[in-house]
Length: 306
Length: 306
Image (cartoon, rainbow over all chains, first blue to last red; front, top):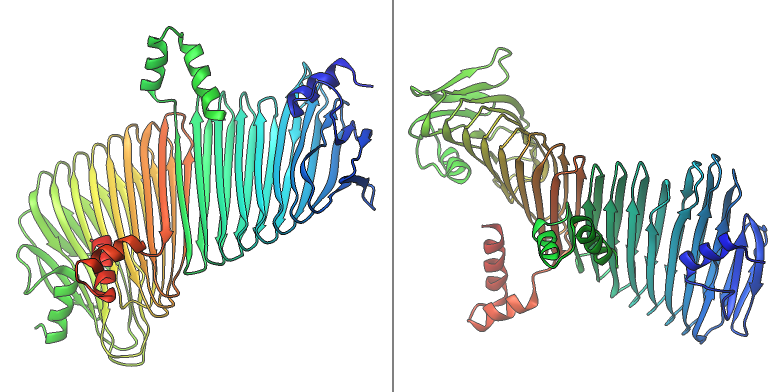
């Protein structure tokens, strides 16, 4: 049921060599390719039929669910609405992501809109990887959205990655963080050629003692450009930190626009940003160890995006 | 010609005990109170009659010009357009600023729009202080604007200060920085009660090897609020740094919104922001040295705004 391209995409997007163990839902070219549920993790098509509902039973521990999307149909622009209900006290890993294979001059795109209800004391690791491959000249468009609502004492860690091949990305992440809940986001985006990526984030620290740590790492090669926005809104006693680092190579351009809104006197918000080229002394050091220029650059970029 | 209130305001705004030495222009309640020019510094009323033109001869060194504004007329909202032409290779200090004395329930306001043409190799220190005093209940409004154009290899340092008493401030600073030119800005704003201050900054690094260093320090007491915006636009090989620190006391609120726009691949832009209450360990340390709580807070705030 999986062809060679499907396998390559699944490997890149979800680090899967085969159909995964445990619960999964694989979507290909806008259709269901395979689904498996487990005793604690249910997956069903939603009422409108435009996405899935993933329900994690309260107390589920150390389980994972994979929901990769494969797109390799010329001209297809797939849109899905997925909902995750993460039961109280559970601790799970969700691996999502989309891989496009473009073999023609027609554009292909995927928009995944993911809603998360994270119940009290639940812990979630969410890994979302986007890639695009293939020899076609059609534009590859990936517009992921995550909307997270965290109840009390919940913990969500999100790893959001787009490492090349995607021509156009409009990334949106919103989160509302309840009392004692902690959100940690690391977004890594690499663009090259004439690619454009935009990331818009709106994080509301609404509960007492809520925390957020947002890290953005961008590598901007060729004539590509990236815009990063984050709106950190503090409505209670809370702590929020944003870190934005961008490495510009070739003719890349970058706009980084954080907004720190301390609307409560006990809010503590910090931000650090740094945009620039690779530091010369770092390059020199690696080259003195025997690497040539390109190898040294490559090693620094890999380390930066790890 | 100066009454007791005038003297108090001049002392606060321009650190003057008497009429200053050298060139000056003192404006009171919308009218000229006194003017003096020097061999190298000319001051004249502009063509429209709504402000002054200050011309600094090329090569002028170690001279200063004072242009304070006094406002103590109930209901008056004074607007002036001043132009500074800073000749090539000069090195001067400009002391501006406005003091409002409000003795009634009528509002009083001043808007000073200051344009700077800073010629090649010129150095300028610009000190602008805003205060408001008096027992009146009328609103005190101060809306200063600076628009700076820096030619080649010029240096401008701006100290922009508003330390209390001002109910409403809309502060605008724009700058275009030419090749090898350096702009350094330190803005200090303290608000209390129900005061509101907004600072909008737009700094364009347009010349090769231009530099900008923007520092904002805010203290937000009572139920006051402050918004700080800075748009740092890099159009050439350049270096830009923004630092925004805000101390929130009582019920103060703050929004800090920097935008780093690296539109050139050799731009290097950095930003640091920190919003929060006074650190407890700092307070403890000072109190262990014999200060009471209020004295300790006061000392920290003074140090922060120095």
